[in-house]
Image (cartoon, rainbow, N blue to C red; front, side, top):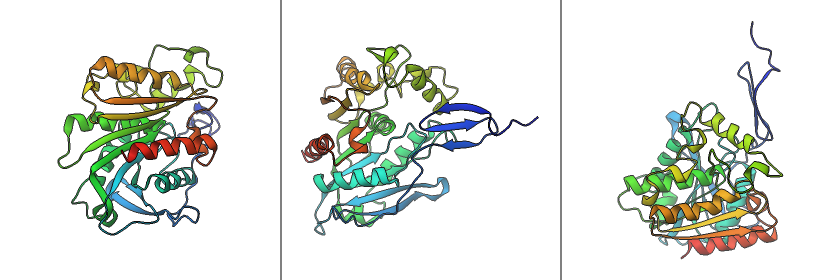
Length: 314
């Protein structure tokens, strides 16, 4: 007998719910907005198709005043959403990146990787690597990149799941390299790192349970024997960590975020691995997960964007 549509197989509010009949209900992050010239910042954006055969695309951003022939730092960005919701075209990320581009005066490629569970990991990582290679390819033919992007000043960035992706792309870049590309630094905003054994207050966190994060990882990455100690989500288990492919890292964590302790621990893991770069971890009091994405025009959101802008223009 076929399962009734109201029988729930996986329930991960406030993000996603899957029913036993296969129906998937995304509870947030489904709204999209078109590219634009932002009336507040003057930042211009447009959409490009990277690989039509897998429906991989991106949104590109340029600041209001760009001089033909001038070269800007290039930030390749990956959105958050637990690998299951949001997109590069959501109003949340449109506003966030408009604010960042206006403050930092950089070019941005925001990669719209495919989401789980329809596309379980490692698909998001493979899509993001393909998007990164496309963004830094001098032969891509994309006008904005050819005209304005400086491949000697390339950065990776992302929040939450996107921060996890940015970290993993930096690790892969350290292994594979790409000719003619200088990856200077990586910015991680409340990155999604985890592990089987709880640390700090993860077991007793007031706003989210460790069980929820455990279930989310198993949902997006089914069948992996390492579970939450998969090196892609637990950098302490990654034998390639010392080869992280950039020399500068800026990491933001938030006091009320269950992922805070992992972000703080990331610095220690890198030091133990032998990675010899510079890392700054900023611990923001009184804020929750990815507060600056939710409210980039708030006082603390503006402070973070200014600090990231400085990082991207070093």
